[in-house]
Image 1 (cartoon, rainbow, N blue to C red):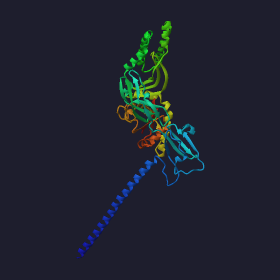
Image 2 (image 1 turned 30 degrees about the vertical axis):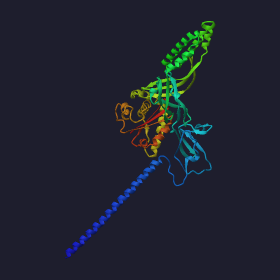
Image 3 (image 1 turned 180 degrees about the horizontal axis):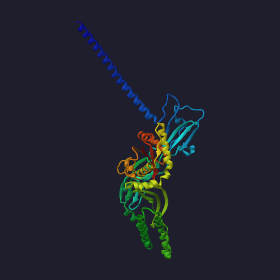
Image 4 (image 1 turned 60 degrees about the vertical axis):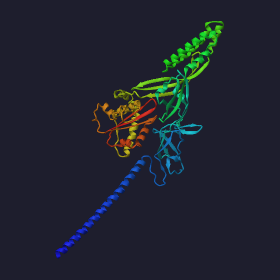
Length: 503
């Protein structure tokens, strides 16, 4: 009986122990579940704060704080002091100073003034200091597409036409008249048969904001125009020879124009001087025939035409850059023509035959290496500034990495392939392989950042990289110890920046 009681007591204790253990397990599981949920929420909140704080300083309640940066469009009015603060409160003294590339500048250096007001005139990054103590950044950007109005163009078979003749109105927020223009279909540049054609034109401002517009080109039959000209030229028996001469001169001029369409201005001028052939008739004979010759020397304007004249054409690494201007001519009934005006310059780059090789581009990279010293220093210093903020050791410049970075910038500029991937489809690291004869023992790890802007300062590239998570990680990666910096500007003012990292 005693043993049975002891057994019962023992079973009760075991049950109590199981219950206690079960309760403890349930408490632990609950703690893990709710604690884990709380931890996950906390991490997400931290992530959100980190992502946001890279763009502006956090605001605590209603306290007035300076913004990290102010971004405005080119052509905007100059920001007021209040625009640089959160929860702005007017202060007793308000003084503002502007700096560009660490040099103090005046407001007049930053703006353009016209009848409509005062506006920021350039895409740049300025340092702004208010009341000698609050420092921020003013970024002037251009993300606005130009406003373009096209017109239809009517010509006669055999006439040349210039792409800019289609542009009736161009307006850009940068207040600049400079733009690049190209046909969507390059075959539209040389249409010469009777018909009505749809013409699609791409127009970009100097900061690569582009629009696509459509218009029409109407080409009339040349035979109809020739018959009317012949009847008006033939008047009296004495003008018969002059009519033939005019026809001959017109034919010669036409062939000269066709032959020299690529455009030497000198040949155009010589063609115009053939108009003097009319006056030689007056010295050829006397009497009524002489008078007829004098009558021939009074030229009548037939039409005014625009011709595209090539100012320069360069092929480099298989890429052709052509700069043209539009020349307006008066065409007279004796076949002569006279230059009236010239309008602007247009630069077109044809990238489709790019064939640059590393050995070729390496020669140019070496030739411009010394001229890029200032840019390398600026970008290195800015990168190390970001690294110090997170406790990463400073990088040092490496000449070979800088050569590779410069070759990369040249390759992008002449191939128009803005990507880590090479123009021929190979990975970006293959450029290192070609440069070092595929010896990758120099570094254990590699990285690359790229960017492009128009007419941009070096600091703009660094600021842009900092705002991008992947690029910023490269800049502050403690694994890297060396940095290469490359920079190259094409004929359109497009600046390519490259960072190559090694560690």
